[in-house]
Image (tube, rainbow, N blue to C red; front, side, top):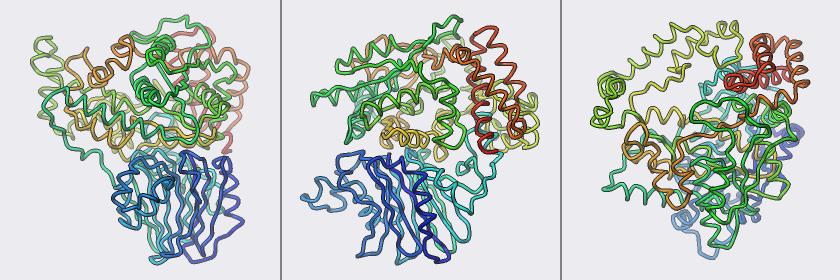
Length: 632
């Protein structure tokens, strides 16, 4: 994904070119195909080019439009090009080869601040309107691009990478303790604009910001919560419409200057993306390279019920069924989990949630880069969209009576229909009062730090459930807990990781049109009983996926051999834990005694609980600890 940056001196001072170049240097790797900066009085923009589409070769950014004095820059892939060509009355002879940036600029000229409503795809952009003396920034509907900013009375600065903002002399490198605590306890950032650094904000997904010398205004322009229910006559019509939207979402994301590859697990999300991409590529006589993470060690412990450790057999079935998919196993023997965590911190400058998966993710990306791929397809967002399981409360009363399921009858047919939403919040608070540290089972947060920040009280005020009991009163409430509309952050991390490896991550399951269609399908078409779930994706993929995959109800356990990998790198683990003990910051925020205890237990025996503790406590704690050492 390309990247952007910019500075606006609100007091009218001219741009500091030396500072601009310093910011630019921190993002140099974002522009494998070149970078440019352009100054215009008190405003300057920069753009880092990755040729992500064939039309991007014709793009020259930033640009100053002399006819209306608009300074413009963007990173973008626009998916509704044909609709925009018609709506914006673009002459036919100008359409071929027109870069997506030109469409965004013309959309701004036509609709002004409402133009994000008319753009589909993955994008973020900035427009300085000299006539109005205002700066306008916007980010795509699901935040598949990254955008951070800093504001004070004198300066507004923004960038796709937080690294470019850390060099600003105005930025004080002070840790946002609430954000750090949220990372440690798997609580999505709340407020969503917060980052690990005080003063540096992120522009959340589906948000815009307008800045002048006097004010800053931030607003959200798209609410998936408002999507109406879709009313069709038969299940077949829902499936037909679903496939139409899904095919289009995949097709749009195959428009790439460099070759396309894909991540393929054993599941329905990435499997359906690969199957539909292979179908489209087959029309043009092309093949699809796919990558599957596999264990490097034999799993000698009992996995939890309905889980398995090696996703290769089912992923290989999907590849063989498609016929034009070449599958490569990623065992990631060359990259240890500790090395991957350190490299991830170099990319993002903040701790991540999925610390235990970084070794195979980064190894996969290194392989794609070495082979010259420019686009990676993934199905990361499918759980809340295409492969939604269905809400248990959508199971019919007659079915529950037939199954004699009294618990679900009371919970979903009686309580859910009569209790207000506030009662559910009260119930969570009641549960919390009987467990003062509900996160202790899955977090390395230091108890004193948790108490000092009043973590439990903050959770209660925000209606966050630290027990993750999924006690909700509607299918959408449960679904939005996965999608986190207007507050999601992990998609931006994909953009930042992709930039480090010269390619763009694209997720068809997060296409705006597909999201709205999936949310519109009545929930009873996703689930009929406790055993029949994810029915839309299972039935729509008949013929696309082998039945062994399509009907499979077990799940692959990623990083199942993480315990063995850590033991194979025991010396570095000991060195790392010792380094954390020598860090005042790490001692303050992280429970090093708990991490040491988990490490000792792992050395005695690798089992299911020890593996889970290594994922949720040991490695997440290690990533936070490394971040704190770097900060210190």
